Image 1: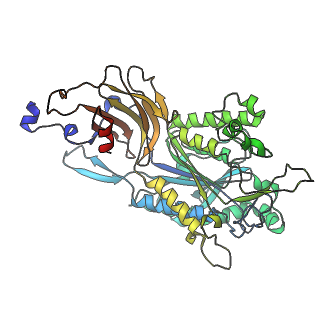
Image 2 (image 1 turned 45 degrees about the horizontal axis):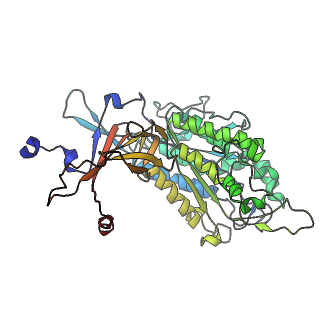
Image 3 (image 1 turned 30 degrees about the horizontal axis):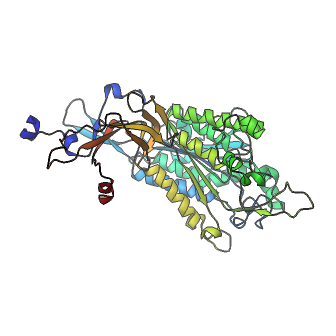
Amino acid sequence: EEYIANGTVDMATRCGTVEYEVGGAYCVRDRPVENVHLYGVEYAPFGCGGLGDGNGGENGHRHHGTLQSHGWKESLGAILEVGRCLRKTAPVKEVFEKDSAASVTTTSSPVKIGVFAFCLDMLVFPYVKRRKDSDHLNEDSHHDLDDEEIAVAIVSDIMEDPFCPLPLDMWTYDIGNRSNDRDWKRFCRIIDSFSGLMEELLGDSLRSVSSSSEMPAKWMRNCGGAALVALSDALKDSGGRATLITTRRPNYGVGALRDREAGQQSHYLRKECEQRLITPVQRVPNISAISGNDKDIVAGQFYRKLGEECAKYRVSLDIVVTNAVLSMPVSSMGSGQSQRPNMREYLDVATLSELCRATCGKFKWLRVGNECGIAIRGDDSDRLSANDSFTAEQLREELKRSALAYSGSDVVFKLRCSHGVQVKSYSPSLPLGNIIGDGIVDSAELEMSHMDSSSTIAVLLEHKVGGVVDTRESGKRGSEPPLVFFQSAVLYTTMTGRRRVRVSTLGLVTSKVPADVFRSA
């Protein structure tokens, strides 16, 4: 009351949401998460009509028959646009001079970006090096950019132990430094020459594709599981955001997911069978007895371990799937039965999205095709750049939304309630991140590796024994009904490395008459 009378009320009592900068015991890590954005893009050959014959043949794309790049050029264009936006919106941090307390300088925080490709049975990492015998660049030497050349590092071990072959600083570029555009020019050069590098690297394979009337079986492979491991391995020391852009589920190498619908049309006739299909392989109990397939056991262990490691290393994984509706004849039918086209390709969205949930990332499925009202263009007759199509615009906006959103890392969320109400559980039972504490004595905390402006946390509340404490003497005539209070606290680290806590307080009026609730709705 004395503070109120003097007018020196704390900010938290006057505003619903406040934010403080904290330190000391709230800073649990010596090295904050760096502002790093990595992209792994699936490469599909040019001039092959997507991944099929364009006529709805087996494993063929129905509407991507005339899209020569099948999203490759669109992906590179979208990543370049993301880099351009990150460069413009790079966060600025203040540096105080030791000699004078009033002297403050501002510098751009580092914003790193990198890209690699995966296809067939390998991962391809492009990087810039000196034309001389040195394998890395010396930033202190002011040599001309013409003295540099682009090289590639290839990982062929995708069956057992894939990894990132280069140090992170060697194939990522600090585009946030607006005073020095050398790294930005290098990144643009990587994007512009990446298609030519892949064509040169896969020369014989591409010629066999263009000369054959059918798509070779090896081009049906997708080593996305190995690409996910490489992304996690690259960010295990720095943390950051990683995005996988693919056209189908991983079906080759580590993390290969089988088609759990193949030849089993009766799965949808029984509720329990259908439920197994939409359950991630990481969460299916006694999966060997249910499926009878060892591949599901191995895949479940792989994605469960990968999610735990990413959460430990503060790596947030996003998966973006860009594909059209497919026409795949049911090959399991007998020769005497007519084959019905199955207008889809099994993606195992449940398993991939569960990995994104465990790492506080997002799963996005961009379904492109005429049935979605999207015009597919890009053939030679149109003379239209791949970056001008609606598909490219959709992908570009999705990547920009994820990269440019205000976000924080090393997040701890907690909700406190006043007397009479308590937190029962989080909803759903497996929310983003990991639940810390049993919630018996106090509400459990939610620990997340990443959070942005689109993150949502839901809790279930319940009445506590003893009821709401009447602090406003509502039993007297003319008094107001009692209030219940909820206070959420989010402890996080900004992209500039500062530790902050955001506290939001909400007070709600209670009532014993149900009609009052509907009247104020």
